[in-house]
Amino acid sequence: MGLRVALVTPFAWSQPHDVNEHVGGLARQLRRRGHTVTVLAPSNRARDLAEGRRALMNGMDAELVALGPAVPISRRSRMGVPVGIRASLAVALTAGHFDVVHGFEPGLPSLSYLALRDSSAFTVATFFSPERLGYPPGRAQRERLLGRLDALLTTGEETAQAAAERFPGRYEIVPVGVDLELFAPAEKRKLVVLEWRQTERPLLRALVLAGTGAVALLGGWPLSAAGAALLVAAAIVALAAVWRWDRTHVVLTTEKLFVVHGVLHKHAAAVHLAKVGTVEVEQPLLGRLLGYGTIVAGELEIPCVAEPREVYGLVERLLVS
Image 1 (cartoon, rainbow, N blue to C red):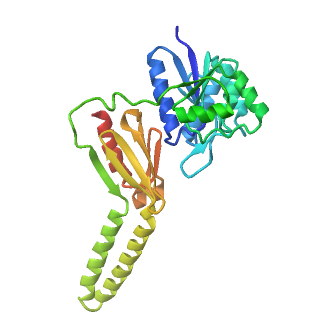
Image 2 (image 1 turned 60 degrees about the horizontal axis):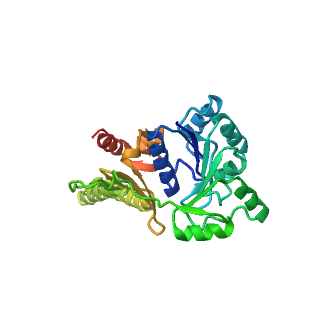
Image 3 (image 1 turned 30 degrees about the horizontal axis):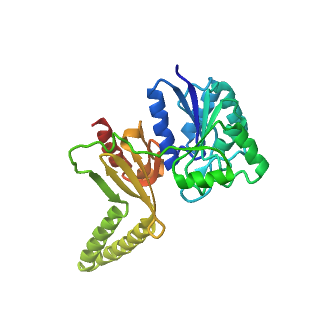
């Protein structure tokens, strides 16, 4: 008999996160076993929020229901907080008629905490990190949450010990595991398809302008005036390229799409191509004129990509193959 299961994550579905990757994999496996699974999550993607509102009005017939926007908690993470989304969560829990509500990282002030606390279904809590156990601060609130939990899970012994201090109980350790399809034995392939820094083309343009300007300077008046102007233009283009150095470094392989931001403070995100349903390119008028845009590939959103349609074409070809 198939069950109706809600998987609740505190992290924005619009941004890659290890917890969301685990939730997505669990949802796929449960659906393969005949269960109806709905992911409840915050999101900062307008499309997700619009589809979430429609799902709330139409009886929760959706695999993902975005209940509201997330707020930043660090440079790498965004997390949904109770303010402004309690009503949507209450509607989702009521309309979904869930048999099981599974909350991830409920030790944060988040959708997961509220869903487990307020749900009347069978509840499961999974803790991933010993550093995400600070909420709720009051003992009475923690006991209220524990009184609603039917099963306690962690992904490791260290996390189980830390969680037991805050939320006493019997914990089952369920390792995160590996993707068997991804690591299945196979013939070695060349994986790197594209590695591209946005500054390469602007710097090349600067070199071309500078070379042309230097040649023009040797031609005498009035070519020398044009040459000087070209050298100034080359300097401006080069400075602009250096200024944009921290924007985007894209790496596309036959399995993943990576994006790396920054130089001094680098941070990266990635998405498996197998998990990318559609690829979109967003280019405003200025972006079309200047040759940049935003690529949305599944959960990964990459802004300020130079010549985005070239990257889009490569990703689409890999998806088809």
